[in-house]
Amino acid sequence: MMAAEQTIKVPHERIGALVGKEGAVKAEIEHRCGVLLEIDGESGEARISYSIEKLEESNPFKASDIVSAIARGFSPERAFALLGEEQILTTIDLREYAGKSENAMTRIRSRLIGTDGKARRLIEQLTETQISIYGHTVAIIGDTENSKVAQEAITKLAAGGTHKATYNLLQKYRSKQKLEKLQLWESQKPPEERNY
Image (cartoon, rainbow, N blue to C red; front, side, top):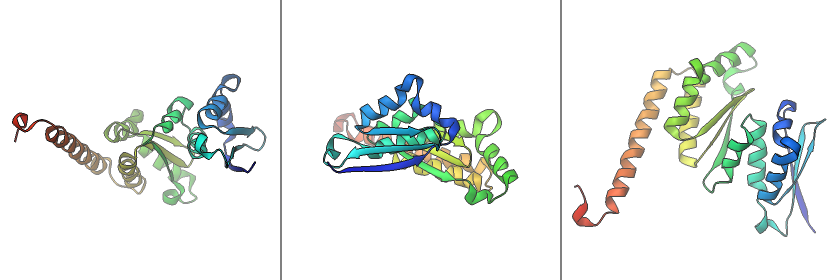
């Protein structure tokens, strides 16, 4: 039987979340993705293995995304949202904006979180995504379009853009989305009920 595997590095402090109480999270990933997950507590490596012949029955790519999401600070409950058909994981490395400066990294992280978490919460609400800011990365869970807009907002802020300009961008996107939904809804009504 041909087996394939991939290894994901997990920060030591996230291993407990990945294993779960009495191994519950690990078991759920294995069960729902049809893979074997081995976690080395010493090296922090999570190895996902699966049978190539049984690829139709397994989803190693989703398993890999879920493990990566938990490694990047998401709770297992939030990470399992990736099992949804349209949901993807996007990761942004903040070192591209902060360089090697720990002070710059701290400053960027606090800009992205905002006072009492306001900035992150607003980006999540306006793009219908989930965001985790952890270490030197920002991870986003959402559908492709929403994740792209959330990524744009985060990179704008990380590069020094103002919160105001970023929120304006998000509000515009939100209004456009609402309009498109309304037009789609209108177009599905019988002609005599349409409002235009």
